[in-house]
Length: 355
Image: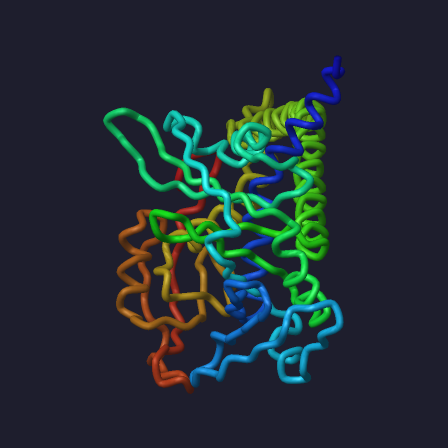
């Protein structure tokens, strides 16, 4: 009895086989042109016809025998290409099976598991393929055509193509009701490519699983780290808020001399408040290049797009009064902004109130 681990590995291999086959087929389609081949009814001659290129090429042929050697043109036409080889209908053992519609996604495995009953020859002695012929949606059934090709029938033709180093050989097995079934010969080149695809997909899947597990394991640690940092930031923010509130609260001294000293200190600090008020009052298109304090007034030099708007903004802010333009405004070198100089009196903040 297989162990659970073996069953999981086998299940993963089957699951990866589908995408690997699709990638393999896509790589084969993009890797180069294909060649149409056919075997004579008596099995004595092999004919190939390239289908790539704008102009149709003349068919090439060679006898099928152990001593026959392909011509240089024949070898060049087949070398490295995928050959779709048509064979006589008498070489094909055709079967039809009916399956539930739910089995469509598992046709490969179902057909392979039934080959012992469908084929009179052992599985090791045949090539086989399948094709969906009909879907009965009301009955929820599908009719599948299965083509079985004895290896001994096509061995000589495949040997000739093997000499030409064909990339892959796909047998087109005709059906009695018309159409054909593509039967892969499972050459080593194709199998190796598919194996590499499966290995690549398995590696990608394994890396994804490891990354997911690592994320789940590291996630709580990262959250804890961020929680500690957030708590530290909150503590510092609370201290900063307390310091700001303490600085904004008017301080009352116990004696008159101490109160006078505090008033002098407030007058000195209030200059910073005036600068803050000035920054908030100026329009967005204006900026100061020089600011000076003298006799309780501010002399402001700067650039702006609209000088009258600067005066209006200062007066309407409620923090400045008696604002006036000193000298004429000069147009700047850029031809857009103007240089100005304004004299205004700030309402200095002392102990939290305006004076």
